[in-house]
Length: 222
Image (tube, rainbow, N blue to C red):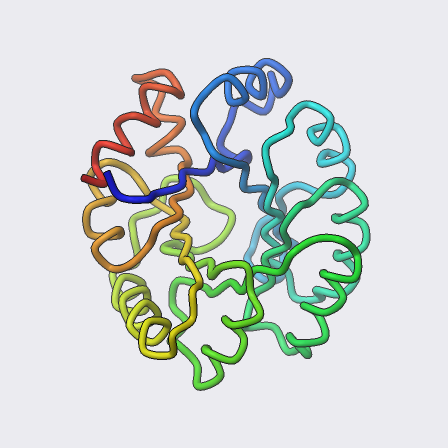
């Protein structure tokens, strides 16, 4: 079995029964939680905020990664760390001083993650920023909408990232997020991802329990 970590995308759980869902997830073998924040500008929808995170944080001891799919990154940092984020994923695409953003995240007591949209190529300064990140987050679909089909070029980006990290000698894992399920996992893992975010088609497939879905996802990594 490969050294694979599987996280749960909290936006895909039954949001009408959050406490019950968190109890199920906490008892499962899931490694951590992925908490999406979308501002309506970075993509055309709105998901989650700091107030809900404040309610979820006391319900679990597992790590929570806040994925900021937003354009104005700075204003989200302090509220999200204060609400309980262990990791903050910041996208490469919005114009900002990423080194300063990463420094601020660490100063607040969390760890930075470098994120990329599904259609973003690997940039020239990838290695420099990756060396300062806890890991890399690569979207395989557009942020915020469940049930999308995997964006094929994202696998080429994922593979290129993996090659460049190895060439540079940077020990930095890559997380894949979006349409991650037993059918797509073999190609995703072969491309270099070792952290898998399970959502609607994976960890929350209604035909199975969360733990059964976890085992199916793990089995697809072999």
